[in-house]
Image (cartoon, rainbow, N blue to C red; front, side):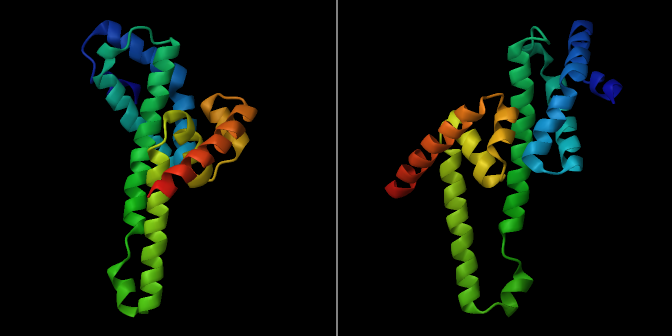
Length: 178
């Protein structure tokens, strides 16, 4: 697979950097994608797509073993996974036309209400700043435990707890504004 990614890179120095990135970060990337998607096969697909994006943008990477590169790679795979998740959620949240035919009006209206409330809350979480958004999203949307979030984000468990408390307060304020 490495040879496939290398086909996107012309410069020999960039190829050497990409090879370091591939061998150094691949396992972490898979873990990040799995933590978002909860599906190994989708996670592998996301990592594959992310490596293609990285290979096409090697000119933006100076030192493949720097903290900056680690951050770039992890954010790239996380964002790609979230994009796939959002795409799948939009598909799953649609009311099937076949279901509508046999659904009583009360049940239809209740399903619409639940979908809209959930979307409103998720959208409000997405509008929080990075610190609270990530913690709130992983905890409430992805149903991850505090220690899992702490490991994933490289934060202390107590920090994640505090960010959840503050994030809840901010979320309530944002929802009350509406």
